[in-house]
Length: 351
Image (tube, rainbow, N blue to C red; front, side, top):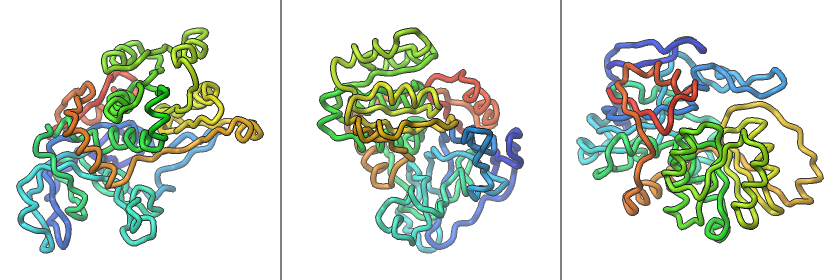
């Protein structure tokens, strides 16, 4: 088995070769067909999140141990199962749900494993998809994708799931009547444009500073796109909204983008922060109740939500975001390109 893994934070990935693990019990060995490259992978390789004020959240403080094979957007074929796995599971293609919890706490038992305080997420806390095989703890984390291409399905496990979960947190009437402001037109932003339409939303106003990404957003069906480096952009966004702005989803998560999103919200509006660019900001607290604003962090989504998303993608024939397919051995170069802002859409690695 060949994998590309972190052996030291803030250092290049290292190629590793070892025997593929033998599944036992409920475990399933999946042959990886496609693995998406995500900004979370960039942050994990760096070893920390910027908390602002010179502070950082270190990956080892989160319980992340090395060596670690990255990759949480995984599509593949089940090739071997433990003694508790039905033979009918094997030989089929699946999307892997990676946001696995401890399985026994109240949060997990309520179906919210992504919120577990003792996570076992693939590609973050245990070996992931930057490999030709990955060990999945239980077949219930495998979602059939008989008619979806692996490279199109893989990003649904994070890029798609995160945006779908964020949109589900918006009142359906609000989604139908008012545009959603999306900050960031990377892989998640482009996916969100498509999902807004698939869920019957009015549409998306998309903000970025990269012209290639803005062009991709327009092509994906955005109601309008805005370069936030231009003067007077906030007024232009309000004009384009044609009324209240009640929903902002920030896929960047920097001080500047959150402040912009907060300033755009109408009374009663909500901003969801998805991105992890980092920093800290000060808030005039009385303005939160006076404007009835909500600030919500959005962290991926549940297993049930991923099942719903795959069904939706199949039902509406969801077109994938622009996708660059690369060989697995280009994992390190792909992380560097993503970090440098050179990618429009999603990179998918294939062994």
